[in-house]
Length: 292
Image (cartoon, rainbow, N blue to C red; front, side):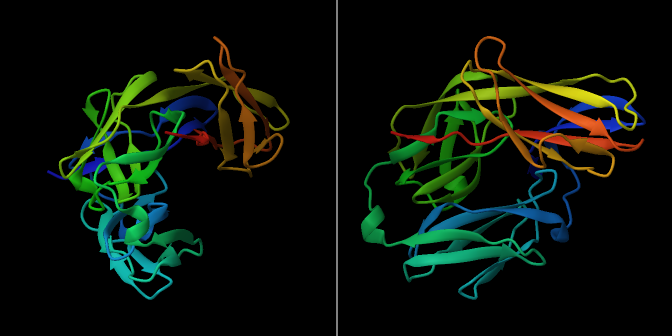
């Protein structure tokens, strides 16, 4: 049975002037995978170790893992993602910086190759971990002693398995469990009989509120995003996916901080250009990792 995961954005869609809220996060089985050409996002560990294994992933526009996607590196190496939408590879032997890209995409992702002497560890050590993360988006932990083969890492959040998107001996990129509740949660890591230190992350959930009445040209509409799980301020990014229908006031994309406190909210405003469907995506930007 093939496992499919998606990790994506909070999206407000209006179709025929009816507002609908969709949270693009799901765990489904026997779902038809996206085509190889649908890959949009290359997920790589921040650092890899010379001559050691590492795992990457490719996601489509909806955050679904994408099998069969071709990934090229600036050193000439090429590979394809497997049935899980990930690929296990061996890091080049020469330390330095290389870039990865997907076939047909101009964007490139840089990763640093470290020497084994820089990263040797007999136990799992954690150098940084986010203070706050979204329950529906990926986050990264850096350190030493992780497994380059993603599935060889055992990572649990509040006792439930997390999904390892990408990994190397020095980096883990994780998706939280699908049924995780907002709030503070424990994070436990093990690999090859090595165990990490006790860790905690605050996970937040976003909900989007908007007037569902018809949007006409020139009409202003306020979007309210509520943050659950923390009273701290978080940084949100709104992106207008249909700028011909409506304008996101202040720029596209647009960043804004939530208010913090018990009513932890952020506001965005749109104005209609013409009748039709509009789509606004909201995501929480990663918090500054804290040293551990």
